[in-house]
Length: 414
Image 1 (cartoon, rainbow, N blue to C red):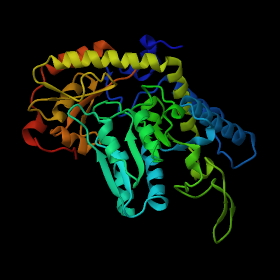
Image 2: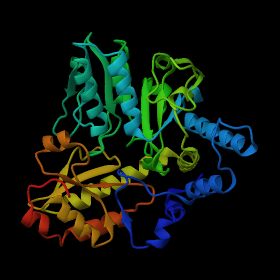
Image 3: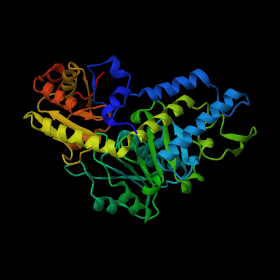
Image 4: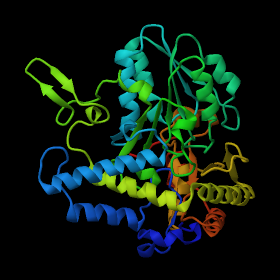
């Protein structure tokens, strides 16, 4: 078991950037040496394509790839490794499911339900799918604290509902949705459920069998793994009707000039082309790293950081906190009255503090807050209470900058 108190030393970037306070973990996490070493070892000792050759390197590469799939399966307690599809990340995973629904499940007059806190990656694919099929997209509203009410969710479920797509954790407010209860209500009506787990996977234990959802997806880079690799879990009850998102090498074993006669079984028929084997190896090692930390301890660490941040920042008269102060998750959004969030971000950067500023790929949610954007701090195992104190001290001296003075209503950098 690895102690969180000692975790920071596992991340090489902090030995080179000793003054760095990295609080942009909801965007991407830093990588522990164990992940970097695992990928370096793969490229140095194993590197070969999988499923294409009989030589020993190809065999070892195939074994490493499938062992990684097994590790990820165990990490989220999937019943079988065949339920794990490797993707480029959460966005690709959701698009894969959305395009399948648009082409094979949605019809004119059908309905899809999402929440008012979705990242664009769990909103735009469903907008597109509904537009293509002539279906209707319903949005569960959020209250003033950013939470949804189960009664509102239940009201939107109807005989026409074909799918529910929900964030496990909001990427703006850090609010955790009651996913298990939502899935139960949907399941009672035979409605499939997709969960965007990008912001949850590094902070809470995910048990897909306990949640009993149909699809669960996440990105490696948000859980200390590499960029460009992610996972789509598909419940076995949904596997057979799904069509490949892409076709090409590695998905079929029977092909003629007219058609594919035989696709490979899941998950391989969904993974066309040369896979990101090194990414899968790195992601599996990241899962091992998290498992060694104990996610219950990670959650307590997040709670302590959130509580301290809400107290320290909330005590500043010019700071406005957004969301539910009692949530105690891994994300806290705030604003400085009369200052553009980019100016706040630039000011914190001058103290070597990295945060996220803007709309966080969740424009409808930010619009509902009635602000131009927010400043978001998001926590990880290498953050400390002292990091929060430094942020609070830095905010005392924040002043209007070029964005506030010259582009006060502009949301985007060009």
